[in-house]
Image (cartoon, rainbow, N blue to C red):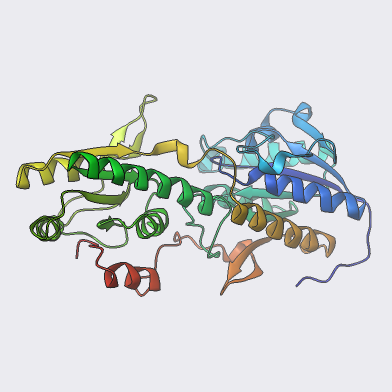
Length: 360
């Protein structure tokens, strides 16, 4: 645990960056409440990194009254944005960094708590390198930030995916169908694996394990021959069939996003076995809604630890969980690789031990 240094007045900013997730408001609330106990002034940066490029009117005073009751509300009262990285283009990077530094000085900020995922924290790393005082808190439903075993938002997303999978299972049993649930996670299968086990899925397909569709079909046929009339597959959006590439679809904005693997599995199962297979893509409902107790508690723990680092004047750090305990590591050690499920994970062993097919 970080030891607090002598208290002194600080102007502390809070920013929520990247995609939204359950638990952001809980983290904001805990930060403001602890900061008030420390005698710090707290302000919100509106719309994530965009706030540094829009001027000082984006600074929102945060008080105990401002955050009263928000820990139970989804989304973020500060707004956020996951559109682009102003530092990605080397040509414009210098100008973007200069703009942030100019806004920082204009706002008179002493330090900032940045709550974000891997993309957001790589942007924060650029700012830390030019001397801006930041402490990072991990949040992402995908749970893929390198350096932390768990992030704010993941637990609630698992609850949402589990509820959807269980609902599809009862529908499948009513109609003797096969149901495929495609969940988020990008290149990590944390949501799919945990939700699939919790919902007692028949098959779980993960980005970490390239799956053989013939193995899935054989598993399905074995279940049917044993008297089963319904079959449930939970698949992560980044899962890859053997001999194929990741599947993408075009969004309304024209951007390529992961998606389509669920429909591919349904079509293949139907073609090979004749089964009535239906696909549900859960989508952004996994990001929304009120956080569960686990996410609210994690948000408060991260917030407290982050404020302790601020008080100790130990900026340039990201808080996280390692071996089940809170710790911190410098932005310089932020891992480029996303946190994926280890192949020796006890959850993978559990799934296969209770008869769930992982496509291998």
